[in-house]
Image 1: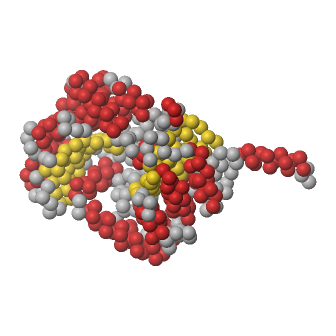
Image 2: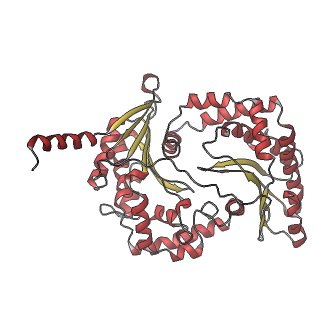
Image 3: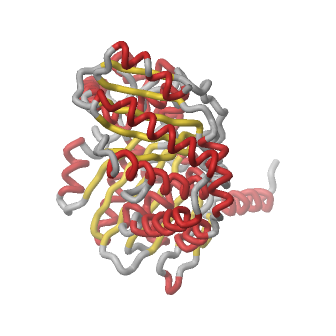
Length: 459
């Protein structure tokens, strides 16, 4: 038999566990730029950044699930689910969801990536309670009805067809396959016609229940907002949906994966009747937690990050061989990619590839001069700040940081870290990354003789 005092002690202990934990992660001057985080008893994390000088707010929910979490048979399920959460809940129809945000002049959308998914709404600060209620309702109360799955299947197949009609977009999916093969990172986020046609409402519901637990979610909100008010509104919305029943749940840790890059020197070609040939020449890069990523960011900027970059100058300005040419990096939990894209006339493919390969080899062997590195540092610092000048970008930064790194870095800290990159660090990462044997992906109307020569670019 349990005594009254024992019962009271147990109740007090349970209530203590149920208290939300709040931290100030970044302390801004006069509250501006202050980033705060509250973890609710159900494991739901809420991160906000206050910016009183604006009249808008962006509210988003990040899910710790992407196409990387799919089996071959489930390829495309994460993106399919993204569509279905807009199709209705027990409280709102699909029209109710869209019209509620439209009626206040807001914007609502979502996106799926390989390692996460995000749903968001941007509204006037006075309409934030509405945005929170609608987005939380979508995330916790989706019905995923059979008829909605059937209707949305057609829309997703059209989206796949639209991507296939854009070779400049499609070539990046091909490059992922070239580098990762038939692995989760190598498969397309949208899925394929066959996998999308094979997905059923029951399988998608199971996927939803597994990956949309509060412990897998991060709420992010930025703008003219009050942190405590956001916490109260989110907590009320999740409790109304019965989504915070556990009082001892622990948020899922940032993702850790296993490196799955394929052997270098691979070439994949899709023959297609296009006016241009679209090429990506690339190599293994760095994971998003690698400390060398700052130096790689500077290197990427100098090589192909703007009109003064080496690739732009050599390929477009001096020779006019391409309209669009650039380099980019992609960082995942355990690996990454460095790629160079160019779109050019099919007859110019080999010339473009030779110039790009020569530039990469030159920088790998001899490095970049100090003046180019200094210019790239300045460009990267400026673009970083300019890219964060709206509440949507701020919401993305704090939400992704919490989900992928489990910590926050202020803009000043980011600028300082970029400024600390030394020329020797840039040259070292150039040797490590650009000194590897590249792989190549091409989409275009190349003839057999041209196609057979592509292997020269990665030899």
